[in-house]
Length: 295
Image 1 (cartoon, rainbow, N blue to C red):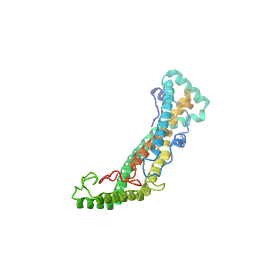
Image 2: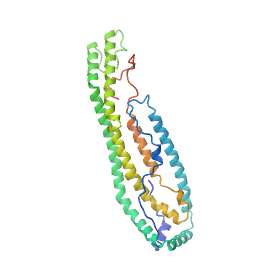
Image 3: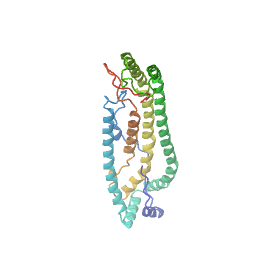
Image 4: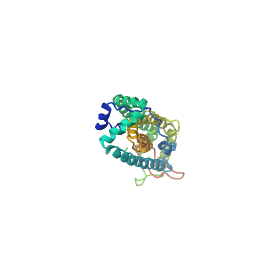
């Protein structure tokens, strides 16, 4: 998030009464970077789902676009920074005379920006903290819910290990020498029970209208309706200043849209990483067992 430049020599001009213009209208959330975001998947397993690769490709593309924009912005900012103070004043005076009605708006905008920062930044920080907490709580509730779904299978497996005289923290009966075939068959049945429990549990959390996607929609809405517009609102004063000074302001753009999309993609990557890789059993065999883990 960028903030108004408020350079000392520009303030000298302002204090001298050289007022200028800016509408300071909050711009709508940029559609370009968001268009690169892939639709959220409803697949339960990561192993056969190309979603993670698509997510990473989208993030790389958005970050590349942001890097290019930052380079453009830096060049324009350096050009503005290197303007001779007298030349800057002359351009400001000329713009003021050519745009008398807009001049007052610009000065009012400069005065309002500080108040907007003081009023808006605490809300942005509070919302950011809230979403971080909500994400952690969401994952905790997901694991708790999954543990509940797995509980009957775990209980059945512990009963099997007790019957066999095995420690309860053992991962599998297959690694124990001399185990009867019925015990291996019972463990496989338990593993298939756990797979079914996960399959039944999955849509409640990863479905299109389930809790994970609902939370991500709330986060995306905040980014597009609050975070990005707020930053672009503050940055609009910069863009207007560059225009007044004759720098190529049309190429200067706030990076908040890219930042918002990157934040969203990172959140999606974090929460979707909690899906299971694959079922524990295929059509013919159960290859491994995860013991008491619910992940």
